[in-house]
Length: 482
Image (cartoon, rainbow, N blue to C red):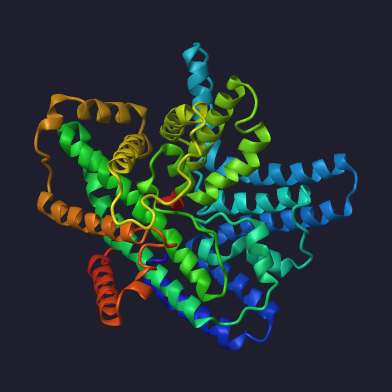
């Protein structure tokens, strides 16, 4: 079920009414309702894959209880690795089986050895990368004695399958989300209003910005061999705002929806395109994934401690694994490696934690140096996005080669240029709105206290009208494929 669908527009009010008016006297009933609603929400796409969520839930619930009872370290490790192998095994089979098989055959063919093996027609379960990492965080934290395992299977099932963030995050930690299912929840009008506002802004970024940018991205990347360099630059810029509007829009809807039910999800985006260096960008982009890899992979490997070789190794591991997490394509690995190269100079100069504050905090305009740093970081990010979006490495190289040719200085030319100019104006408007609201949790949060009621309502109505105006065609979210 898509957040931007009529189905969800009907589903959400029904669950909301049942949650607050029918099951509100029993915390256990509320949690059970969340489980049922979440399974309906996920099963709306393909009910068969509900069994994967159920199996993962049962195994990690059982492992958690086993870790609580078991005192011997060797047996605790066996339990932990049972969870890791099963969860990563499912993820590896559905997401990476054909990738490894095809590359295995290609590698042996290079040495003149022919191997006959056929790939499988595997459907990637939506959200498997997200809920797999979420359940893994539970067993790892229980193993490390950071969290007491739950004995309530319904509560644990609700944590694993919580529908607002089930298929595309944020990837919640058990230490943050699971305890919230134990607390009695009372309806908070101000939280609900704030959540609704965040949902509205998320829908706007998805439907109005991302989906419209996506039309031109598909057109330009799909016909890149016939277009000049300046047009390809425009295509890369459109993709930068497509993926940001799409994914941060999803996160806003997820966080806002959770607030309607009395839950606080972790922040997943913090205006990343205003970052002053790549390290800051990764602290602000897909925060739940980057912090997951930091805590469960980077730090256990040694982090930024140790010799220069160890530091460099860890940086490349964390970024390449992050790229590979996105999908079984060499372009994602190249994208991760490129970001590692961006990050290394900051680490070696020990300036990777230089920009921890909000840019131009309590100021209207950035300094020239801040503006220059933001521009350079954004340009590097857009360049890396070319690999992320390209069909293959060859496509990415040819795309970049044309950008670096003399045709870069020609005027952009492609079908729908007039419509694209209107979209550029909309994108600029969103950037200005996000710059104005960059000190909040999301862009339009600030207007509640800084704008008078008539102006607020004008903005809300304008956003709603634009969503309906541009939302005639239902388009899925980019990160559903990851």
